[in-house]
Length: 108
Image 1 (cartoon, helix red, strand yellow):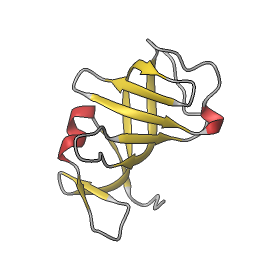
Image 2: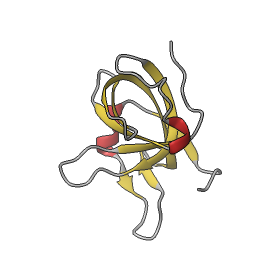
Image 3: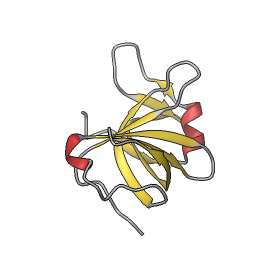
Image 4: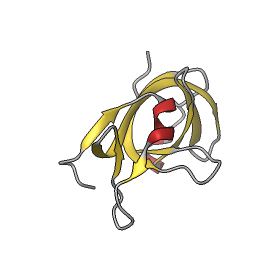
């Protein structure tokens, strides 16, 4: 992870416009800004015990993949959360993913 790159505050719908920076890099680009991490907030609309949730911010939905340390019982459907984590591009026809590191929960 290159922490000199931006962590962009985005709407889920904007992730559809993200492009890979290069074939050999984990960085991506949006509006000409190079980044590896995305900052999103919204409501958890579905989830599993395996640490996969869908976050809806009103513009679209993105998948959250929680680390083992982030999976305690406090993550619940209907919670409003803010997450910052590495962006993983959507497979063809799939959802973009944010890998959520430990201690990233902020309920409101």
